[in-house]
Image (tube, rainbow, N blue to C red; front, top):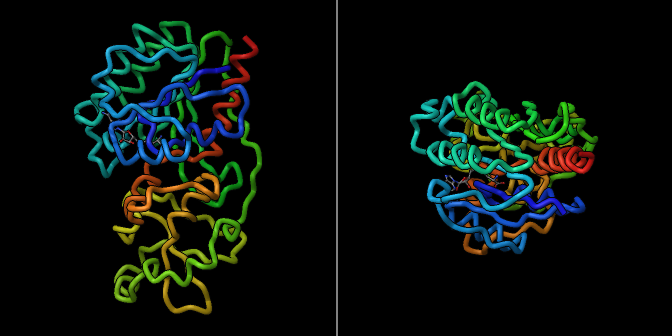
Length: 298
Ligand SMILES: C[S@@+](CC[C@H](N)C(=O)[O-])C[C@H]1O[C@@H](n2cnc3c(N)ncnc32)[C@H](O)[C@@H]1O
């Protein structure tokens, strides 16, 4: 059994991916956000520890460490203050912990801009000093045939093999319509007010449900708040108004199972916010299973 420790665990993209894999188990998870931890526990039966990662003294014991640190320090919107941004202190601390107690394998996920950061260079340097081979790739669910863009950078490090082969995405090939919920057209809370449509129509990314080639834009945590650059909208010939994707539809595009649950008192805004930070499950699953295969071969 390969033991995974899930750090910055959010709503649990890692245990969601592990559901369909054998011989992999999440043994510990940590996140500072109580709301994410509630969702994690509700869906995966594992209670994450609610604490700041800069406060841990040593890493929990694991075969594979998964890290999804906050991306704001590295993005243009987050002002790219990287190592000087207090939100990246936890990662600086974890790199020091890894230096003292390196896991056999590690996977880090972040925005593509992370690749050029000092943190990336430091982490790779530490891992190579300990004899790990590393590989860096920017991957997107569209490579799996999922009609949603979500480009993310992934660093993989494994101790033992001579090289890490590039990811080979298995084909999922789903059409947008397979992720949609007909009843969502009747939900008034999803309708985009006409005044917003008129004001922002040129900048809004709009798709039609029956277009077999439709691909939606990346949903960010601002979806449901900001009308532009936060995700796509749906238009239907027979209806006047545009509508947002429901949280359930976003979750489905991200690869979360149909019965994914939310605490009842969580607003749609809260659900979009948590989904906007979450992992794309098919990409996570492939990375975990291909890393596992490499570790078994050793
Ligand atoms: C990009 S999200 C990761 C989401 C996760 N991988 C998922 O599947 O939902 C970053 C997460 O790090 C958490 N976080 C941010 N700073 C933290 C810190 N200093 N200590 C612990 N968790 C932190 C946030 O609450 C958030 O859930």
